[in-house]
Length: 320
Image (cartoon, rainbow, N blue to C red; front, side):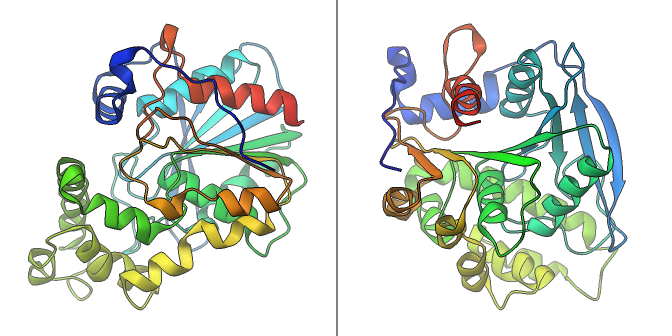
């Protein structure tokens, strides 16, 4: 579809990309979301923890929520979405990727931007519950790339999966990586690296034959992390091979279910290739909205219900 026009106009001080990004990530609080944790076992011997919250009335609809890099099911952009879904008669299943639920996962591998095998297991789990006729997938940042890749890969998406929404999506991972390594994003990149390396240090005594302290000391930036850990742990040649194979951009033409991407033009994490205008123009199931404001996952709006949360519900109402 052609570019979707956006009517998002936040208060003046939230029109600055960094302010909206930082406030939404570090200051925003979401209350009244009661989550119940469920652990599912994976075929390879690992596990994923799911944080469920429920509609006040019985429903046959559920949303799978996918967080971003080093996020979890308690981040405000996840709980805010969960609350919005619950208030609109939709159960919410917030996925904690491997190693992101507060407990180190069992295997040397963990999660990455293209690990759709894990998402496939979550979808299958919801279907086994035999409670839901409609499933929506709502991914943020890394989780958005994962959701869009899942929808466009060479698979038969279950008929119960009715729609996908991606927010602040790094559709081209290398393009996004290059932005993150620029001086304007130094603080964000340093924070990501600190958390990633911290988790890798927990794996060091468990897998001394797979990773060494020397390897960890050689991680100077995010690309180094992907060269030294992500690619080796998940079967890629190197970081560039990982970015190439896991970027959702190449899969967007194949998407056949209603899909919405919301990427702000002042998102400092996204390079030019992360705005798939051509792909959206050629696929009548793919809707691209590029608000002028919003930063990275920072779509502040009145009443602490963010624009992307309101827009998601409206998209589902219109598309289904």
